[in-house]
Image 1 (spheres, chains in turn brown, purple):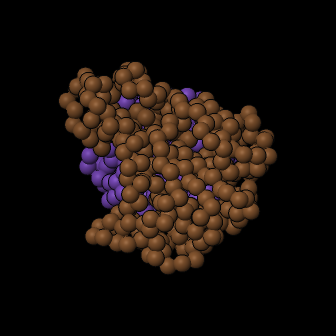
Image 2: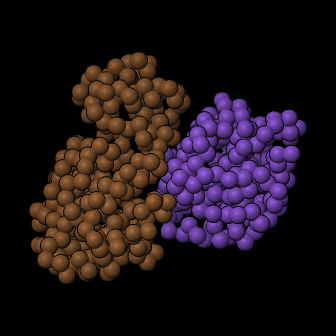
Image 3: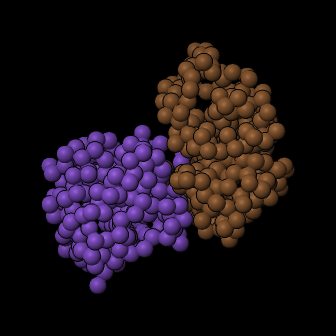
Length: 272
Length: 195
């Protein structure tokens, strides 16, 4: 269990170091969450003093890689919130299917589970061949995992149940091959994905999309940063494009929310 | 209970429970005073997908406003916030809610430890935490931190718990300020009302 070994001033010190030495800005992340991640890592890696921890984060490139991977939350799953995927399948993607080409951005894709889920739905709607999924994350090491399309076998039972509940049409196991404790998803799915690092805090819009998925990323940001990111998404979304957020996230308190219309009861908005 | 009355202000009450805690909540809620002037946060382990069920059940038993906790929502006195299934709930210094989808703690999300600890850091000695029935040890580490910050640690008497393991673990590891029979819980909470 986490003890309160690091105080608020130290958190701020560390985050300032990270910005200065590595160029990553976590200062507008929700304080309670980021503090918890930092304290967790500190005790996980058994540092004896904050000074030692701070020095490692500041100067040790290899350790900073780990820091980045551990203080961002990379917990995700396939077909998470099955009703959300059902709505994508029935309400959103068929509309996009009328376009000659579909560009989708999965922002904060982590290890890729959502990108692969999306590719499966696109494939079943016969739209994958004219789609391109841009999957981005702040964190290069999770993108390496995402590219491989390999996930732990013991999660697949849950994923398969989610898939069925989301309206999946096939035998889920037809999409992967199991190999010891891992499964590898069909490369047909990843052939339509482009993986790249992108930092929602500091990087700009890089294309125009018809659908942006960013689920359970914004909960870690403070309100001001959330609103900045909504602007970024607005600038990256075509007219009549869709924005999908996590089940507890909302556009509601954002100044330009009136330019978006919510689709049914899911956290999906259409740009007007 | 004399100790509680000398403690001064209650700025927040966090109740944590697992298996067997629903019965306690259903027993406690009808007895809660409408004069309660601090927020109540409820962390219970349960399967995802039936959030509104618990909210509806409790709503029908109290005149307090019962709502499912939302991201960035500000905690208000007299409101009951239910932590949504599959998220941890943390509290910011400005008393707003942060939800968090990180790793499970004690096989649980939401974890009682996470909310107890976060609330302790923010509310310090103006926090009251109650740990109810359950069959794992979630909440115990959190109570230690509540204790450290001078908050009030209340544990359900394991003899009145359907699943005594969780409160018993807490009793074995943390020095409680109060051990409560479930039947006395609503009176206890009403006595926390700030005059």
